[in-house]
Each structure stands twice: as C-alpha cells, then as structure tokens.
Image (cartoon, rainbow, N blue to C red; front, side):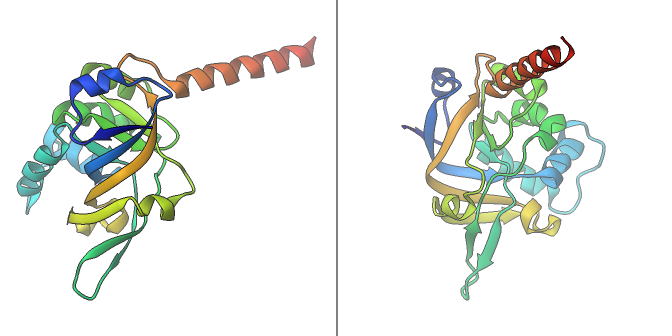
Length: 209
C-alpha cells in the first residue's frame, strides 16, 4: 500500500487512481451532517451570520483543511482522568448525506481528501476534478480497529453539536483507505451502479421474454 502524508499535494492527488489502496498519516478533521451544514450556511452561502466562536473556529479549520482531509465519522470518544480525549471507535459513516455540501466545501477550503463509506455523487466527483481531490473509502464495520490508527486527539470544535457531530482534530498513522473517486473523473461507485443497472435490466428482460 502506498503511504500518503497529510497535507496532500496536487501532484500526489493526481497520481492516484480509482482502486489504489493507500494509508494516510498526519492530521485530519472529522465532520458529519451538522458540521457540513454549519460550514455551508455560515461561510459559503451566508444564510446565517457568524456568532460566538464561529469566526475563530473557521480560521482554525481553514488552516487544517487546506490540503487536508475530512473524515465522515461520528466517533465514540472517551475522556481520561487528565481530561485528554481518546477515540474508542472511529468507523466511517454514510457519505451521500453530505453530497449537497461536499463539493462547495472542498473548493472553499482546498480539501484534498474526503473519507467515508458508500460513495458520493456527481457534484463531489466534479469537485474532485477541479480542486483536485479524492474520495477515499474506509472499511465499514471496523470502528475499533480504525480507532487504533488515531494516535492523538489534538482538539475539538463545536462540541455543542454533540460528540458525533463535532469537528474532531486527530492525528492518524497508517489509516487505510481505497481511492474510489479520483481527480480524473473516475468513480468506482458510478461504475458499480451502472453495472448493477445492466444486470437488473438483463434479468427483467429474461423474465418478460
């Protein structure tokens, strides 16, 4: 497996193709539904005015996400007696829920990688070509194992969203993923969907013939 360091350069992004297995090391940020909607509404479409610590969090995330990675993950987190956080489970959540936001967020923050499961749609694939960026598929059902790649929790933003929905800033080492959408416009998810549709069409044709 190819080892990739975060932040990820454009050259590395463009050298990776659908089907490539890689491991990621460096700092990434978790974000799910509430986090994506907050970023979109406050800083991209400006549907709401920044309030409280919004601007401070935005500036911090701009630095972390420039060349960085968003992980669709609602972690199970424990806290030690000294107040430090530790990831107990860190499995991927279904990515398609973020499809309305992801492409715009990738462009706005120069995000190079998005990790999740289940794949994303045409808007995200278009952003992968433009930014450029990648969609990376993580192993579902292996939350405890993936948590072992999280070496440190560096911080958390917007904990008021709830632990699963907050922005967790984590340092990972050899986090395993597979490229399933690349900067060349290829999508393994779209290919599988097309193949499945063809199989279904053939089956229905056999039944009616």
